[in-house]
Amino acid sequence: MNFFDRLSNGWKISMNSFKVLKENKQLIIFPILSGISLLLIIGSFSVAILSAAGWDVDNIDESKSFSNYAILFAFYIVNYFVVVFFNMALIHCTHLYFKGEEVSVSKGLRYSASRVGVIFSWAVVAATVGFILRLIQENVGSLGKFITGLLGIAWSIATFFVVPVIAYEKMGPFAALKRSTQLMKEKWGESLGATFSFGLIKFIAILVLAVPLFFIGSLIHPVAGVALAVLAIFLVIAVMSAAETIFISAVYHNVTGDPVENYHLQQVDSLFVNKK
Image (cartoon, rainbow, N blue to C red; front, top):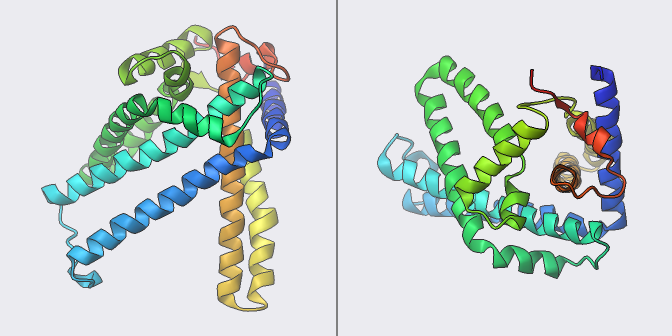
């Protein structure tokens, strides 16, 4: 199957994810809650840093001290924890939908709460990797950016199935990482193909919504234009995040021999480049 066939099938599966989201509009709440939580976390860390600097931006310590790195690492942990917590809630709701069961936000949140220990453990692992990549990038210059770029791609591929694995296979973070990597290698190899459909849709959606809203709002006031554009971008990102998580859940079901409606195994297989 050539590249354009893979792209076509990738587009079809992406559209199916939006169909699931359309039938379960409440699922959009999870990425919205995640986004709001992250904004509150960023605000909390910012307030704490400003308070320590005597509320004077010029007094903020930007040195590469142990305390600054400790704060950064703590931020990484909280950030990953929040993202995975709400992603797991969404994946569980998607799982219920595929099984023909009733879907509700409360069920998703309760399920994530029941797995909070392993979610935190994975957040620590992911934060450690992200923190190390950040250190390499900051201290090795342009070479560091190239290295972290390659490692980041490899890490994204290896962790593709981590959230559904820790959700349903009752594994710890390292076993889940190994299992996720194994699923990728055994089924399709290590390289993804034709996966930029969501990115393309996101780009088009931002152009269609955010840009016009910016100009319309600017007719009233520049601040209104910026506010409307930011709101549009936030909503687009929320919708895309929900659709991408639904996609991952559906692909995981097919990989583990439990195919779901509207997601044919042949189409899913075509999203990946077979290992040579």
